[in-house]
Image 1: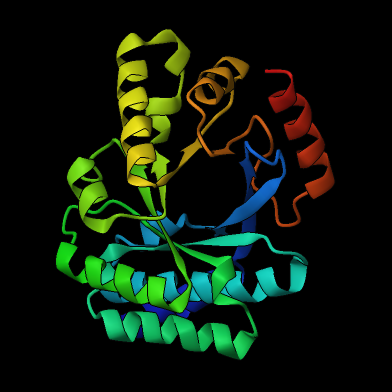
Image 2 (image 1 turned 90 degrees about the vertical axis):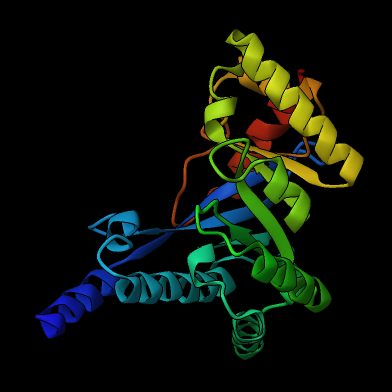
Length: 249
């Protein structure tokens, strides 16, 4: 039974594609980097539910594939945002050492990498703080995902002290229509600015959402308003749209 599970898994992963979702800087109005997303016939989040072993293999494979394809598809100083599930970030030395070794083998500058940590109920804050310290010493950035939702609240933000805080897309969605959302987002952005943490708003789809976020002077925007995830993003087209949209604010 287990043999069949892993045979099927490797077939699924073998057909996986890496999509890259552009992240735009509101300051330069250019593409700052890309979040790597693994697309499989069975959604990756469903693979994570099969077992810890299947989840670990899937998590590792998708990240390795993303690094390889980032190296061959992009030329320039774009950042690559890599997702790491904190469930597997238990051994700081091993986790960071493995990533550093992979980057060295693939010839990728560590300064181009941002480790993106998803919120997780079983977060081991102590281990994550150590990982944050090791990554910083290696020149690798850290982003905390889904800030403002679930367990990625102010406590995690303060304890991990990431380089970048990604606002939860549910807070961003229709923020221009909801005064409570506006108050929460405004407070989060202000807190991050005072702590020297850059703010990235994801899930931005509407002009009104963009205008509100520009008013708050967020640092980065990610969302369908500029582009959808693609295997080969059209950078010039994205930057032209971003320049026109941000300049007209």
